[in-house]
Length: 366
Image 1 (cartoon, rainbow, N blue to C red):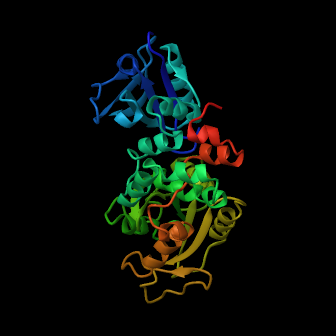
Image 2 (cartoon, helix red, strand yellow; image 1 turned 45 degrees about the vertical axis):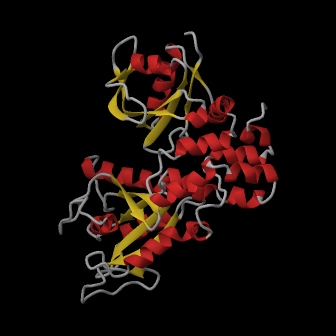
Image 3 (cartoon, rainbow, N blue to C red; image 1 turned 30 degrees about the horizontal axis):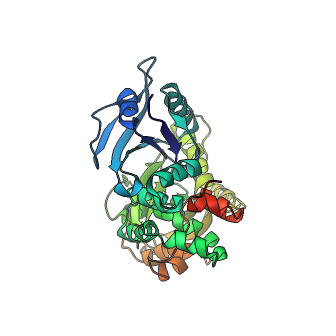
C-alpha cells in the first residue's frame, strides 16, 4: 500500500450498542472497497452495507458507512463506519483492518495524525468529526463552537481546567445519548411512559402483564438533548428458563449499564415483595445509575401513591414534566451556560488533561 491508511475506534469497547470506527488516508477508498459490501459512498453520502472478511467472504458486521471530505482536515477522505459495539465484533473488525494493511491506532493518535494534515489542534479535529454524529440542534451548536477553536483556546490558556474536567459527562451526552432505563413490575405502565416520552407509539401496550418480554430501545429528544430510552421486561417471579426469564435477565443487564433508571410502580396497589427486591437491586448499584421512583396510573380513582414516589399518569401526561426535569438535571448547569462555552466530549481528552499532557490535545508531538 503506497499511502499509509489509519483507523481508530472512536467509541469505548463494549460501552454501548453502536461502535464507530474511522478509516482515513490516501488509499482509504481502496481499503473500503475491499472490506465493504455495498455502494461506496461519495463525499457526504451515507450508505448501508456489510463489512466482509476478505479471506472467507463472511459478513463480519452490518454497518452504515459515511464518507467525509474536509478541507479543514487536509482534503483527504475520512470514512466513518457505524456498526455494532460488542467486543466480539470490535475484535473481528480490528483483525480485518489489520489484514488489509491498515494501521489501527488509538483515538488520540488518530486525531493527532489528522491535526498534522490540517494544522489545527486534535481536539478541534475531533469536534469537526463529532458534528456528523450529533442528533439535536443544540448539540450541533455546542460542537460547532468546539470545531471553531473554543476548546483549544481554553486548553492553551490553562485556565478553568477544573470546569473543563467537570464538563465531560455533559459533553459525552451530546454525542452518545445517555441511557434511560425503565424498570419495574409487570403491567405498571412502562411501555405507556416510553411512548409518551417518544411522542409516538413505539411499544405495544396491553392490559395483560408481560407484554414486553425483551429490551426495546428508542431515541427520544428531551429538551435540547437526545436520550436512548430502554423499555425492559416487567419483573415477576418466574420458575423456568424461558422467554420471560431471559427478558428479566436482560432487564438486569440494562440497569447495570444505565445512566438513569425510572423505576415504576402501580399506584393502585402495594409493591409486591418481588418488586421491592427488584427496587433494592436497582438502587444498590453503588456508583451506578441515578434512580427515580415513579408511581404510575395516578389518574385512576383508586390511586394511592407511596410517599417516596413521584406521581404521574403516562396515560394523560400528568407529571411527565417532572420526569423530564429529573432526567435533565445533571446537565442543567451546562445547558444554562449556553452553547458557546468550551467542553470536553471524549474520555481521552479528560485523561490527557488530568495528566497535563497538553501537547496531545493541541497537536504538538508527544
